[in-house]
Length: 253
Image 1 (cartoon, rainbow, N blue to C red):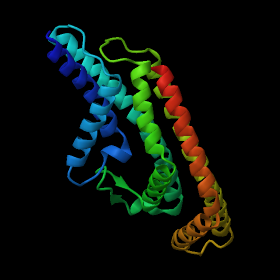
Image 2: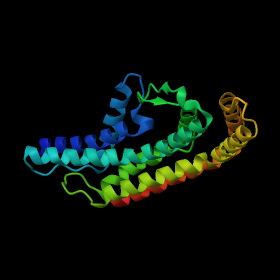
Image 3: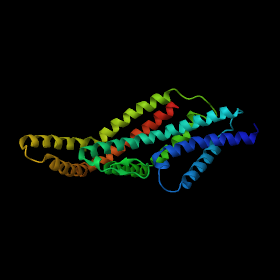
Image 4: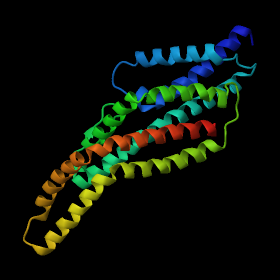
């Protein structure tokens, strides 16, 4: 392999890891607009990272280079998966609150992901994205990409056995974070559900379904307004969890 081809192969490996992270991360990789800006972002990030710490690829057959590229794609996707976990936590919180409020019967299609979601989930996700950008979380994600080349240099075939176990453990923590995020409003709505059940027992002739649906929506919205001051600390805790997941993810590479 000539020196020029080695440099080109090394740059492509960096490009694959960077592209996998950008496309897997929800803040960077999702959207309905023209993808030219994402292509430009991937290219210039890869160029900067390669000029800063890139090395030419070792002389290897094409099959081995393809396996190296698959390894880089897996590492980039794994790092983007960590931000997906934080987004899934607020999505789970929104789904739990929406279920108690009765909003699951009125789903809408999210154009950024192509999946159906509820109004409360969209609200929580938008709040998370705004706070994520305000706290420079995207800078932390890009710094983790830069650090990943130190923990897992390009041009190798080996993958750490801890990546799978770490991903599974953090997936469980994501559900815990989502339940904690939705807990104040959920407790409020569960009390209302118990009161509706007692009311149905006390007044059998009462139309509990009609009254219960309206009451859940009103109480749910009132609970979200009442506990709105707790949303900021909850989002801050979720961002701390994301930074901790990044550290654990880098250590698992």
